[in-house]
Image (cartoon, rainbow, N blue to C red; front, side, top):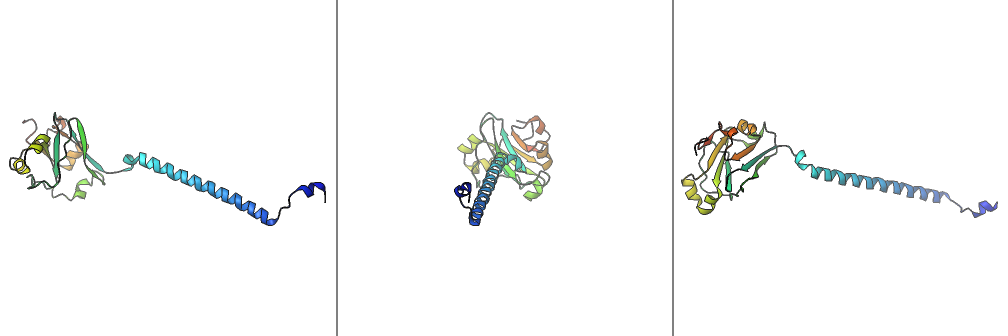
Length: 184
């Protein structure tokens, strides 16, 4: 045996197999790490783009009135009476702000059929928030103390791009409302 061969460690088949397994394990760990990185990255992208991925109709109410307002909607048209009792609190919408009234998981062509409406109309009632706070609901109901009631068809809402304004805008003047546009 030469001196060079004597200095070299003896490598057995088991050593080669173990070394190969270590390389395989390292490769598998690298692949797993890449999968985790990709998973986290895709999760972040989905969270950041959630509003873009969500499909559906979103009805938004904008308050351009000088005071806070409250809104309530009904799908019972042609019945435009206020409910005997208000089961949900009416949340004020501050001046110059907006609120999401409804977010439906359907496209705008099927929104009304998804709601199972008795007519092709939704009614939107607007109240002065101060009136809601100061008076009992029965007084508000009996005296029909609303600022306005809009009775919008699906086509009306599509024309408005599913945005509802109080006070009514010029674009809304030919749409059904009580009191009629321009009468205040």
